[in-house]
Image (tube, rainbow, N blue to C red; front, side, top):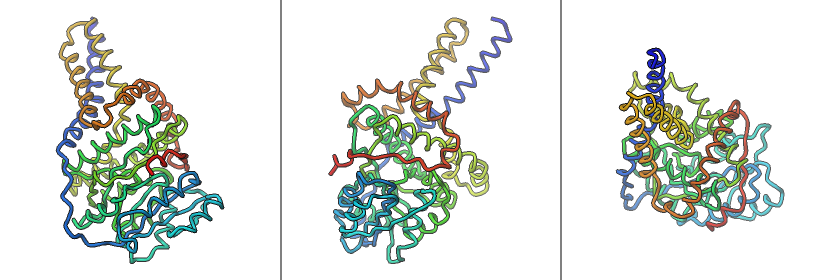
Length: 403
């Protein structure tokens, strides 16, 4: 082989190993750490705190009434929690039904609707008698003991708690893959991070805050898309630790239509790129001057490829370089490195996927991964400006399967 070609091939292969390898080993480390996560024993006789449950919704007429009714059924003293529906562009019939229920309805109208604006409006109308605030999406249903478990967690001097969001529906390939992705995230970015002494990632719903802290944070939020990422970065930058409760469960409707999937991922990816650019240098400065590893770790997460795209990258580059190494000869060490990376990435999934997903339906859904890769690539090519426009994900009747 020509020496120049040899050197170029060596550089390209080395670069590929670095770019893909660090992501695989990052995920593997926290996937392994997640196996050592343990839920803390509940505090005996915890103080009973007054809780506001905020449920913002934009044109969520199909699910909001059922969600509101379910939220009222918590096994928590009824006089110490209030359900607050923040209604944006609901139908008059929906509003009439909501107003017959023992809850508060706050109607909002914005020139440009955002979740942050809706939550901020609600917080302005709530008085300081509340001690905690729980944030749900309009398609979320809490298990009946959710508030009990959240309340107990705040006896441990914490400021923010993320609950365990689970899929409410797994009726087709997309919803199964979406549900699977959620559980892998729970394992790596919540259980794994807490086991390693770092903050859990928040999701945007199924989360709880000290009332005063959330009121301050949401009043400063400016995000159109990705408000949870903006909120999380501010919390970590200010030194707050985000706890995780694996046994405090909220059911969430997963996307089942390709249009909703691409719109949702487009919004997420756009926010990820935006906040990485905005916070990278700041996170480095805080790490070196204040030892703030939580803030830096969150920005590092924004550098990760979506797992489904990383899977494709691992398979394609590993197979390609291993075959080229065999043809060209003399690159045995590199082939071993590619096989090692592939094996470790497979271990990420084996460690992170709950046993409940080892089913025939999941096996069938795996056949849809190539299609999922394509949809993610489409989303990636359309992320420009997506976090600056309101992209609404529609919800249907699937949430009722959990009632």
